[in-house]
Each structure stands twice: as structure tokens, then as C-alpha cells.
Image 1 (cartoon, rainbow, N blue to C red):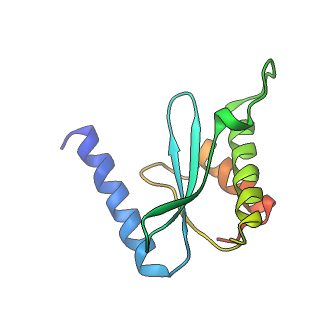
Image 2 (spheres, one colour):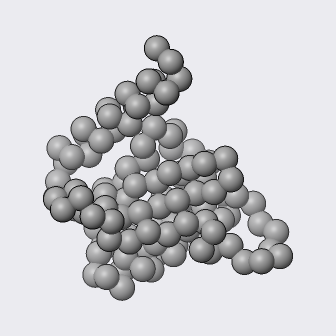
Length: 116
């Protein structure tokens, strides 16, 4: 199997378990080499409710690590979600391992008030 096929297989395995869990919206995470993106998706309608990127929270001239920036993304998405009256979500890490920037984003979202 190619690298892309393995990635898609991991994503599918995670998403099948998530959809079987409940009716809460899904906090989906995408990680590129440079940035982290997070969005809350309502799977019933297939619409994105809230989206936050690392580009939105980084300040010009500020030197902080990618992990700290990912934590800020988590805190920001929690803040915006709470404004839209979303308190409980299901965390969708996609094909990524739960460590580093993905873990920092999840911890930031929990600190911000989201429950998952």
C-alpha cells in the first residue's frame, strides 16, 4: 500500500468510530508542515460551523513554537464555539497521532471550555 492509501485507511478507521459515538458536532484537525487548521463540522448537514487556522491567531513578529501556536488555535476555536453555544464536540484527529501539535490543540480546546 502507498503512503496515501495508508493515511486514508487511518482516517476512515477514526471516522467510523466517531460517527458511531453520537450526535455531537465533530472537531476536525488538519496539520500541514507549516500550519494547523481546526474546524467544527455538523455531520448531519455536512456544514462547517466554526473554523480557525494558525494564520488567524499568530501575531506578526512574534516568535513562539508551533506547539504553542497549536494550543492557541485550540483556545480560539473553543472561544468561538462557546459563543455559538457549542459545548460538547467529538475530537477527530484524522490520520495523525495524538502527540505534538495535535495534542496541544486538544489541550487548548479543553482549557477553553470544550468538552470531548
